[in-house]
Amino acid sequence: MVVSFYGNFRTWVLQNVHAAVRVLPNKVGENMKSIEKVKKFGGLQNMIADRVFRLSGEGAFEVLAQAKKLEKAGKHIIHLEIGEPDFDTPENVKEKAIQAIQDGHTYYVPSYGIDDLREAVVVYMQRTRGVKVVPEEVVVTPGAKPVIFLGFLLLLQPGDEVIYPNPGFPAYRSIIEFVGAKSIPLQLREENDFRVDIDELKKLITPRTKMLVLNSPHNPTGSRLLAEDMEEIAQVVVEEDLMVFSDEVYSEIVYDGDHVSILQYPGMKERTILLDAFSKTYAMTGWRLGYAVLPRELAGYLSLLMMNSNSCTCTFTQMAGAEALLYSSDSVRNMTQEFRRRRDFLYERIHQIEGVQIVKPSGAFYYFPNIKSFGFTSREMASYLMEEAGVALLPGTCFGDQGEGYLRISFSNSLENISEAMDRIELALKKLKV
Image 1 (tube, rainbow, N blue to C red):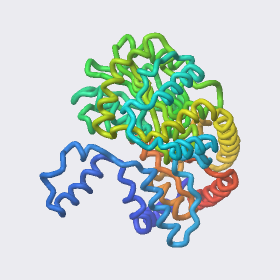
Image 2: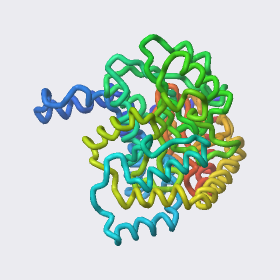
Image 3: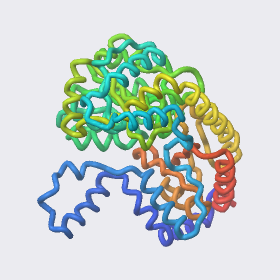
C-alpha cells in the first residue's frame, strides 16, 4: 500500500525530474504548443502548414536523449527503452552489400524496387505465410515508416475514419491525423491478453470507417493475434467493406505457435496493404529497408508516391535485403531463441516484484507491465526509475492514452544487464512501499 512516501515522491518528481517529463512530448496538443512558440519567436506564424502540427513525436527517442544526458553526467543507465535488436546484421548480408558497392551498384533504380528483391519477397511470402504474390504487388521503401506514411496518403481522405490499436505504435495516429483523417482508438485490454476484442471492433465501425490498422506481433505489448482472431476480423472487414493496413514487422519474432497474417484469409489480399521490414528480423535498423505487399492496382500509385518523395531505395541495401530474405534463416532463428530465453527469464523475475502485473508476450521483444498499484502515472514512474534506479524504460503513454498505468520494457539487451536492471527496479519500487 502506498503511504506517506507518495506525497514526498510526487514532490520529488515535480522538483527533480520536471525536465525528464518535459522531454516526452507525445500528445499532438503538446507538440503544437511547443511549435507555436518556435513559430512566434522566429516570425514564422503564417509560414508553417497547419497539418504539421497534427504530427507527434516518438517517446522512445526522447527517453533515449534524456538517458544520454544522465550518462554524460556520470550516471550508469541500463537501456531497456529502444525497440532495436542488440544483435549484429548477419555476416552474409553485410558481405552482400559490400560486394554490391564494389561492383558499382550505387545508382538510381526503379522507384518500386529492384527485381531481385521483389522476387525474393515473393519467395519469402510463400515460405512464411503460404501467400502467393507477384513482383508487381511489391513496392520497396527506405524503411517501414514510408509504407505507413505513403500508404495512408494513398488511401485516406479528410474525414475518413481509421480504427487503430491503442496502445499502439505512435506513428499510426500521428499520420492518420496528419492526412486529415479521424483516428478511432481500439483499446487493447490486459484482461484480453492485449488482443483485439471483436465486439468492441464492431461497435467502432461507422459509415465513415475506411480502414482498420492491425499490428501483430504487437508493439508495445508483445501480444499476437491468433488464427481465430484473424478469421473473425477478416469476416468483419469483408462485411463492412473496409481496407486493412497490416503491420507485420515482428512476424519472425514469435515464441508460441506460428505467425498468422490477415492475407491468409479469403478476400483479404485484395483489400490489404501489408507492411514488413528488415529492421527487427535481421537487425538492420540503420539500413532503412522495408516493403509493402498490396494489390497491383494500388502498387503503381504507391510507387508514384515513392518517386515523388524518395526517388528510390538505396540499391546496394536492396541487394543485401534479398540476401537476408533468402539466406539468413539460421541467424533469425538464433536471435529469436535468445529473445525467448530473455522473455522466459523476465517472466519469472518480474513475478517476484511486488505490485507489478504482467502478461507473457508471445511475440516481439517487449513486456508491458502494469504498475497501477503504485499510484503514479506512467511518466512519473518512468522518470523515477531512470533517476533512482538508472534504468531507462518507456512510459506506456508513449503509445497512446490507453497505455496509462503501464511501462514498456524492451528485452533487447544482454541477460546480464536485464538481470541487473530488474534488481535495481525491485529495490527502487520497494522504496515506494512500506
